[in-house]
Image 1 (cartoon, rainbow, N blue to C red):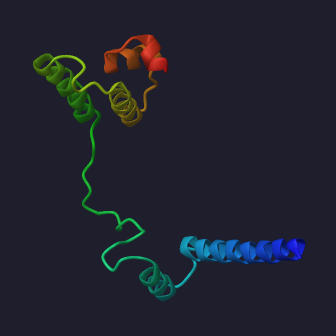
Image 2 (spheres, one colour):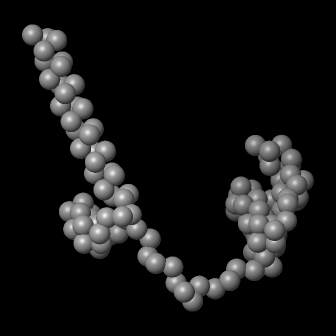
Image 3 (cartoon, rainbow, N blue to C red):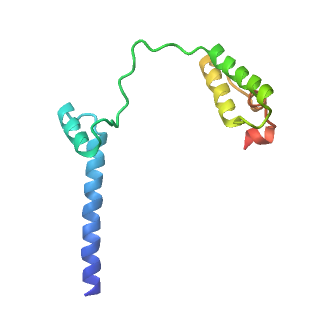
Length: 126
């Protein structure tokens, strides 16, 4: 009796997992028609919410590495006015430096990241 109940429970779980997998497959399928996707999305989400990013703006502006470098400098200046530690976020500073280097198609050393983030090498490595 107990084994039979477990078997029934496992079968139901398997069917539920299969249903969820099918739903996820429909959500991620790009080849589905626009009407099928819209009707399915409406049944899952709020009317004002969307799971997909809006189409890219064709008038998108170009980000220049100098703009990123200016943002890093502005962050350093902010520290002078408000004291160190208040707005400290070395990970963000390193990401900004890496983004600028990517735009410049340049490689970045760990020591350069330490300087950009104004942290010790051990902190940068962590």
